[in-house]
Image (cartoon, helix red, strand yellow):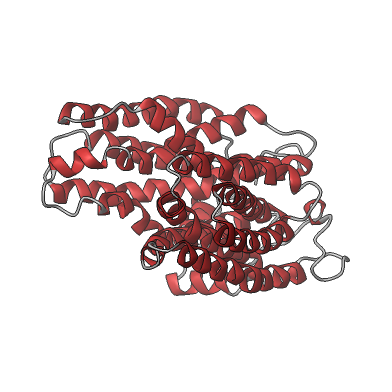
Length: 400
C-alpha cells in the first residue's frame, strides 16, 4: 500500500477530489432542478422517482461498495465511477422513453456510490493527521455546495433542448475532469485482490463492528432530518426565505465541524450536536421563530461534519475507511429515502415537525451515541472509555 508522507497534506489533490464531488452532487441536482420540465416531457409517468433512482443503488449496495473499493483500489474506483457517470450522463441527453431514462438513472447510482465511498477515503489518506478533520469537514460540504452551484448555473428549463443541454453539460464536465484524475490520482492504495465474500457476510462484518458502523448510523439519522425539513419547515414557519437560508446554515455548520474536531472528538460533536438540535427544535416549536430553525440547521450541520470526521478518527487503515464510508452511503441513502415520507405525515403542523425532529435527534443521542461509545472501546487507546482525544495520532488496526 502506498502511503503519503505523514507530515504534509496534498491540498491540490484534495481540492481536485472535492471539485469532483460537486459533480457527484450534480447527479441529484440536475434532476431536482429540472423536475417540472421532465414532468412535461414524460407526462403521466412517475417522474419524481427519477430523483431517488440514484439512491436505490446506495440503499442496496452501500456496504458492498466499501468492499469493492477496498478490493480494486481507490484510483480504479474513482476512474471507473467517472467514466461510467460521464457515459450515462451523456446518454441521458438523448430522446428516450421513460423506462430507458429511469434505467440510466438507476445505473448512474453505481458511479455515484463508488464516488461517495472512494473520494472521502482518498482525501483522508492524503492528509496529515492534524488536517484530517478539516479535510473531512470540507468533504461534508460537497452535496450542499454542488446543489447551490447547479441552482446558479442551470437556467430555467422549459423545452427538451434545455434539458438536453443540462444533462449533456454534466456529462462533458465529467469527461473534462477524467484526464485530470487519471494524471493526479495515486496508485496502489488498498488494492488487495481478496476473494469476494458473500453480501450477507459483508453486512455482518460492517454492522457488528462499531468502528465501521458508528458514522453510518449517525449519518443516516442526520439525513432523515435534512431534506425533509428543508422541504416542509419554510411553509410551516411562514418564511419562504428559509428554503435558501437553511441549507446555507447547514453548510456552515458542516465546514465548521472540521475545525471543531481538532479540539473536540468528532463522535462527541455528533452526540452533543443531536442533543442541542433537539433543544433547538423544541424552542422553535414554542417560539415559532424562523431564526431558531436556522440555528438548529447550523448545529445539525456540525452533526454531519462530525460523522464524516469520525471515519478516519476511528479507522486509520484506508481499507477500513472505505468500508465505513460504504456504511455511510447505505444508511445515508436510507435516511434520505425514508425521512421525507415520515415528515409528510406531520407536515401540516409545526409542533408535528418539531416533535418528530426531537424523536429523531433523541435516537441520535441514545443509539448513535451508544455505538460511538462502543467504537471508542474498540480503539487501542489508553484514554478512558468515551474519551477519544488523541485517537487521530494512534494506529487503529482493521478487520481481517
